[in-house]
Image 1: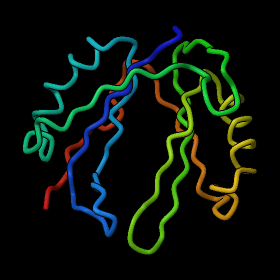
Image 2: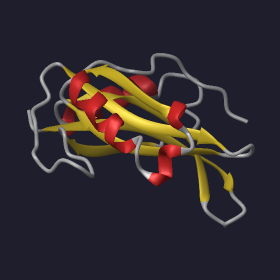
Image 3: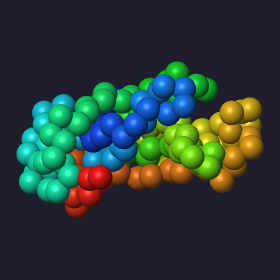
Length: 146
């Protein structure tokens, strides 16, 4: 499967010093179709926090193995390996979504290449590869609102 669908919930928190919106974002899982994403949203709406922010669900179509270094699409089988980078400046988290991969090895190869880039070189410990099983909910509890 060349494409997957990422389901997230985004709740607006505040504006930062540059007047950019800051969100509290929860990754809810990767699914094989947009319809499967829509099918699980009612289950989330039964949980605290999600039911208080019912319009925060976002579905994003993602392609396997495409990043700044690789333009050859792969195929998702039973999992998606999500590569991201995050660092904290003392006030805000800075999160970069780097790619969605069909294997752990492809995600690790991309991480090695990204680690040489100026944007990431000062924060080498900020990389994370998360494995998500396709068509399984990734966040199974609610959340507190404030």
